[in-house]
Each structure stands twice: as C-alpha cells, then as structure tokens.
Length: 239
Length: 84
Image (cartoon, rainbow over all chains, first blue to last red; front, side, top):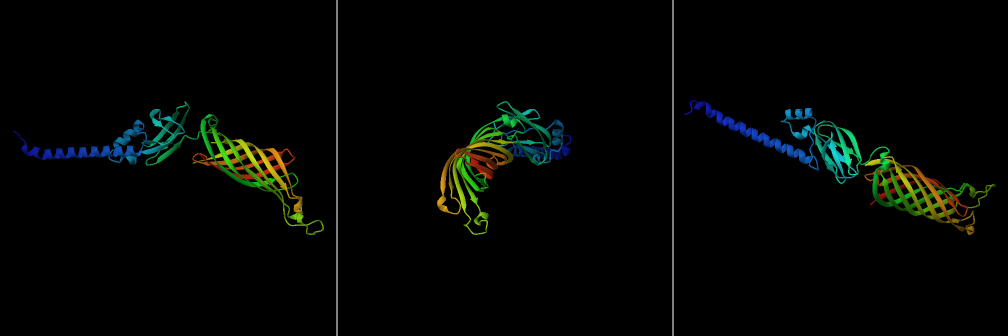
C-alpha cells in the first residue's frame, strides 16, 4: 500500500522529465563534442588544455564546445611526431596540415622529425581562431644542415644591360633557358641554367655625326652576340 | 607561401658568335667565335611560392673569352619558374 499516493503521482512524471532532459542534454553534448573533433584533427587528435582551463570549460558546459576552443594547424616538412606541452598528440605528415583543437591558452608545440631533429614553438590559442604553425622553414643556421632532397625543373627568362667590351659599347641583353634545380638543404640549392644568352651592342646615336656635324650614317647596331650558356651555380636562401 | 632572400654564384660557359657590323658600312661585317667563361653572381634575389617555385634575381657578371673579348654583365633581371 502506498501511504502517499497523491505525492508519488506528480513525482513520477517529474523524474521521467528530468531523466529525459538529462539524456537529451547528454546526447547533445556528445554530438557537439564529436562535431568539434570532426572539424579538428586530421589525425583524430584532440588535446585537452591545462587542468585549470579544463575545469573552466567543464563549468561552462552548456556553451557549444566549438565556441570554447581554438585550432592550431601544424605544417611539417617530413613525417614527425607532434607534442603539445610535452604530450604526444599524434603523427603529422607533410602532405596535410596536422590540425589540433585546443581550449584557449598558451601552448608549447614541438615537432620531432623522423630524422631526429626537433623544433619547438610557442603558440597562443584563441577562441574560434585557427593559428598556423609552419615548421617547414626552419630559422637560422639549421637551414644549412636540414636536408631537402628534391629536384625541381623549370624555365628562366631575363633581360638587362650588357657591355660587350670596355670601349663604351653597351646594349640590351636577353636570355632564356631551362633550369635544373637540386635542393641540397633548406638553404642551399644547386642550380644549372642551360640556355641562350644574347646581346646587342651598341647603338651609337651621337656618332652618326662627325666632328664637323656632317651626317655620316644612321643609328646602327655594331655587335650582335649569341651564346649558348651552361651556367651552374648555387642559390642560397635565408629561410 | 614564403618569401626568401637569395644569393647566387655561378659560372657560365658561353659558346658564342659575335658579329661586328662595323661603323657606317655594313660590308665591314665580321664575325668572331668565342669561347669563354662567365662568372655571374646574384647578390639579391627573391624566391616565393609554396615551394619557392618563383624566383626573381638580379644577375651581374662578366664574360671573358678566349679571343680577347670581354663582356660586362651590367645587370639583368631574371625570372625563373620551377616545377616538378
């Protein structure tokens, strides 16, 4: 026998409503969480922030997760592990940016390349923004030693001023050719240009009149030169 | 996308035909064949693009030939497009 039938009747539907509301809220929270992950890491990594920030995020649970996070897009030059504040966040490959979804705050992002070298940078993650960290171009002298094994080829065109002797002949020059480029390190490339180099010298406008001012001829081209040129050389980059 | 400041050192090996058309009389035209070396340098250049595929450089140098010719590359703007 229920001594308080009048009390339980209204309670049951209330509990049911609360449970339903909790289930709905939980499902919505899961959906929001998965949506935030889907927009984030290619490698499926979502890194939590420091504990204090994490607690704040938990307290602000009703707000959408995406609105309380920021992103970091990490670009690497070769396969590397990505560490966020010392924690392994996954593996990045050079074909795609490695996306991290993080609560706002300061982070230390380190990439450890398969070759053993590593690089660390600080980043400030702000809410709703994606910050790009590009590790492909390393600063300083490390450029000289970081290997870059790659061939490129292309073409080249150019033009300028050429003096064909030391007697005042001067005229335009031009060239066109093929370029073979071999990247030795990130800073040094070995480049060979194979092409045609031509020049025109000279057009002596003032000399078309002699000392007495007599017209002695039209403007003229004194020299035409055409050279097949093979030009190996090194290109040095600062970054 | 990045911009890189580049320097360049190179040595050209020109094989050229140089025709001298003389002064006022075109019949004085003469040709000389020269073989030489052409040290060239580009102290200033800019490379940009995802793979630094665009390269603009200011080239200068000299041509010293085996037949006494001497050419002075007083400045040339060169553009290179590299692709795989």
